[in-house]
Image (spheres, helix red, strand yellow):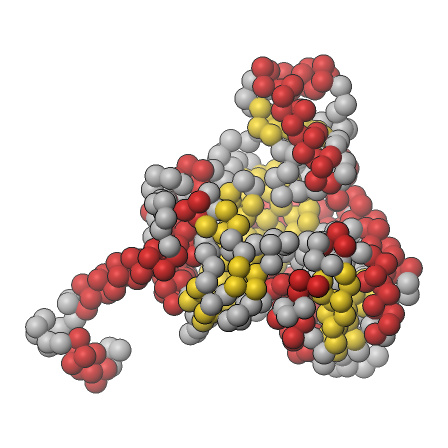
Length: 507
């Protein structure tokens, strides 16, 4: 294969929504023919329109379409695809799917199934990382079946503790337990929720770290023994263990802790012979200690913030490495430039406890300008389905420093036009103006701590009203700043002022 040739001729993208659009764009840039799959509910979706070929894989429910391994493989063979990219979610971390892809003679654009199995089970992952010398939150290394044994272990660790599902993620099967009186109920609830969500009711116990930050390190590996990190991301703005805002670099991380955390992340990837893009997640305690939390064996939702501060296209790199090539960068090439922030735009009503709000998009105009990026799958008239995750788009901005990135995000949010459905844009407008976030003084309890008090949207408020109020406040602040500019009298009209400032080179 020539060094500059495309890594594959045709790739099937086994996903939907904005991540499918993102991967399809990456394929097209490398001269690869992208193939989409879709459910009956996604027949008119943007990823279907952007792919060169598209095939229906079943009815709307994901269990009957996007999770149908045999049907997806059938499509791959039918269309002549050489490889499958799983995106994130659905089958992205399913080792059974990865093996089926390989057994079908196709290339799996992801890590080896063995690595996925080790990290896909949190108890196994804790054991493997402990053996590799990584700092792990104190807790059990085996699933707990007996409630009396659980009580003994919890008492030994010391309350508060966390009861967690061994499989899955997204906060399901997770309970904080403050005292022995709460333990039995928490165990029952966690087992039941984990069983329903993942088909696996096993749970384990670990020490609860109060007021931590959630910091993760992007790692990348190839089949030639090369392992690097691409700096860290702070993902501490969360609601019910679901990330809402991500940024890079972490605003409170000192260089010594950053070096220790990134080195540990690379050590984790090397310990399981990893390949491709992965993320090693940590809890950063208030005292500066960092603990291994888990490893996500896929591309993350928040990968664009890393791309903006490093200048590296992670999807391109995934495709190159999956084709057997060495990664196109070394650790020395990884430098942090400026600051990037991402917010997840979802079809949710923040004034109504973030209730999902599917429906038809009436108007859609994403923000633009320098260093503003929108990864999405929206267009006017698009019907947001009720069957899937409410994530609509990701708004990502870059600035020369954190203050500049926040200012650019505030401007971009004011420009973001999305009507016909409700979204969480007004929530982010408030976060970007909120003193604890602006100063970087926040942790994983930030949303619960301030929602309903300092971060507040009254009952019945509409998206447009909240955005308009924020826009007016920003406009008044800008007008006040202009009054300090030497030149025309304050009584001059806004139109005349704009013209004179332009002539003065202050536009």
